[in-house]
Length: 396
Image 1 (cartoon, helix red, strand yellow):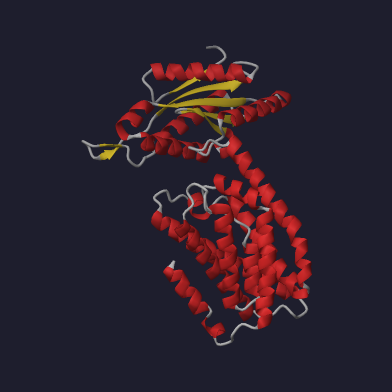
Image 2: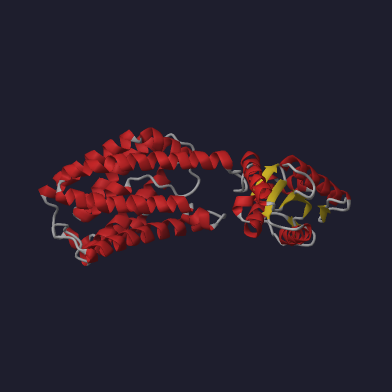
């Protein structure tokens, strides 16, 4: 954080020679008031969103902080960001489990630096002061300002997370795709707010309704994610997968098409938990879930619970499904999970899976029929020595 604060000072050093005007302070107080009112109106929604967040989180303050960076002097814009972030901490984040003051202060410093760089870029591109008539070139500069802010902010966050965390997945470093889209929408609203403030400060009131709508839609999306996604693997949970599979089977029935289903069970998973610990077991589940997503696509994979997974494969014959199941089994066998290794040999211990496969409508007319057939095939694979594929055919 000290490095960031030094960088902020370096970016604003030229502005230090030109002290802020009283007009700057008046506009700052105006924007600050609107920012605080907007934060209070959305406080309940924001607190709920924070309780669901497990990756870089969009808090919508960028609407006001970026607007301030574009219309205020650097020092006053930094004061605006500090006040908004202190309020956000006190009212929305302080008592949320897993939220720390040091991390929050770092995020605030990151926002200030990103705003300073974006404001400096806008000045260099002659976008500010926003008192001239806008044309297409100015619109392109506005887009570039958003990109500059987003790039600086995301890069700092990603590098920091990579340093302090061991689970360096792309989602962990950069956040969910939907969160990034939301951040970009917030930044563009920040540019629009700056333009409205330059025309007439009272016009900023038109930002409130779309901003509150964004807050609520983001919360609904997080609720939807929590209700349908298994937290350990990122796959569909059992209820969501069943709903998807029933819809796919109904579509296949209308179109006289086939659908394959794989039941996948990790071999000797209890031994993994007992010998290497439950954290290693959780890493194994996540690794296998990622393999299934890579092979079959995230929309068709689910976790039934424990160490059991299920995959839906549209438009396959029994032979094609059997080949797909074997490729899946081999891909799982190639997984190397941190913390699961043979101490004596000094090598990673492979994770294997037994797979049962069945095709609709060959083995039954309903989802329950096909799942039962795949489950019986899975037990046959287990009984045959594990790390195998067994196919339930209509003539079996």
